[in-house]
Length: 183
Ligand SMILES: [Zn+2]
Image (cartoon, rainbow, N blue to C red; front, top):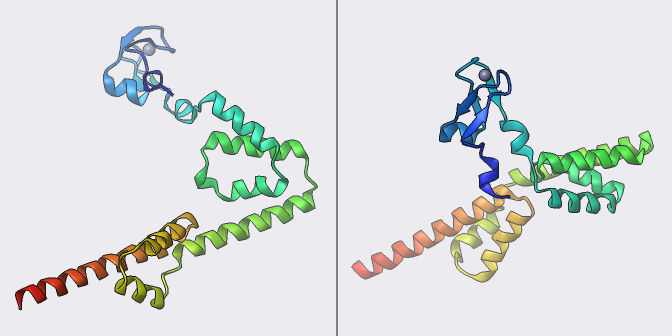
């Protein structure tokens, strides 16, 4: 989307009283201003914030209709990964399928379980063994791949711990190196 289109024009007409108003840059970008004539707040920020590229939405809608019920509920389990407009399409698709209430309940429970699992993965710390390994061997492509694996699978804390131990390890070796130079 072109940024220019997301910004209000410099000169607008108040939707309340029809007065011609010129906006400053902040008002144009925030899409929110108070009319100096009638004092009404004009807020065009929220609908615009959710506005999506129509082609992108259309493609997503086509994908959604090809997904299984399980996959749709799976998407709802990862709310944070999707923009509101996309989630609305998923919800509409689910409604339109008229899924049997029992089955729906079942899918929702599964959904909650996988959300809970994802949350606990995110908080799970790096094991002591792995911490020591990362500290002792802080360099290498395997180590880097491991951090990527943690990141891609939602192990947020493990990912952070990995990098921390690698940095400690690098710091430790740097210190040893310096000491050897000095002594
Ligand atoms: Zn006005």
